[in-house]
Image 1 (cartoon, rainbow, N blue to C red):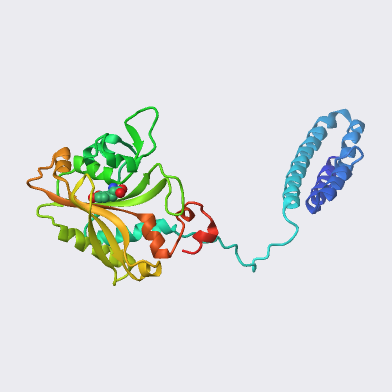
Image 2: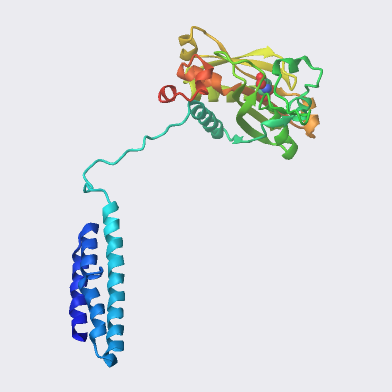
Amino acid sequence: MLDQIEPLKQAALSDLQQATDLTMLDRAKSAHLGANGRFTGLLKQLGQLPREERPAAGKAINLAKVELETALASRRAELETLAAMPKEATDFTLPGRRRPLGRLHPLTRTTEDIVRSFRKLGFVVADGPEIEDDYHCFDTLNTPADHPARDSQDTFYVPTDPRLLLRTHTSSVQIRVMEKQQPPVRIIVPGRVYRRDTADATHNPTFHQVEGLYVDRGVTVGDLKGTVEFVFRELMGPETKIRFRPHYFSYTEPSFEIDFSSSLTRKMGKEWLEIAGCGMVHPQVFENVGYDPEVWTGWAFGFGIERIAMIRYGINDIRLFYQNDVRFLHQF
Ligand code: DAH
């Protein structure tokens, strides 16, 4: 009987291995290990052996049984994995799935172009908070609480702190930078601003500006004009002309509005289009940040990025920038 164990075990192992699906495996299992299986038959014969041979034979049979059960379990796992795989073979000649490439938003592109031009002239980008206090947004810019200029820049206030508001212009960053840094200063500040405006084709409660500030000894309006002209020619084409009109801002003296003229403005049916505010930094602003106005001179400007992007790309409704309609965004 002992010499039957090994051949029966080998036969069972080979049937288990040859099963190519789970049905075949179950059939092999009951043929060898089931109640009437060939291997199970060995156990039944055990009782007929002489008493002294039984322990050795029982031990050998059990060892072989454990081996068979292990083989059964591992073949079952293999076949289950196979069964879970797709029936069709993989076709490696199929083209891959292309991920569509995204692109920059027209406002981002315009901002980057503006920044690139100013960098050529040695300006660096500065940054400031969008939740501002009225001190930086208005007071230090010579616009006290009772100043009429505040009316045109009504904004959103933070209910928990009456001093906090969403900045109405990037001019607040002029103050933040000058408080921290001694002259010379040569910065531009692209950023988001907020106003209590209702949305229409040319207004939105949030939009973007670029602020510029240049402080050094002996700075003139000529430097301002030359700088603005250089940048606008880069942005709008080499035949672009600019002109300054007298205006009022509380933080500059004298103050101007800047108009420009190019093939783009003529396409829109206008010779001149207003594009920015600017001027020579008011001596009181220098006093407010601790700069000596007898030593330092400077200019500042601010303009809207949407305005420039609309003119460059011929966009007639500002709201298109914020709706994220891919049919619009896809065109840039
Ligand atoms: N802050 C002004 C606005 O939002 C724009 C502006 C005008 C900025 C004159 C300046 C400036 O720096 O000097 O309308």
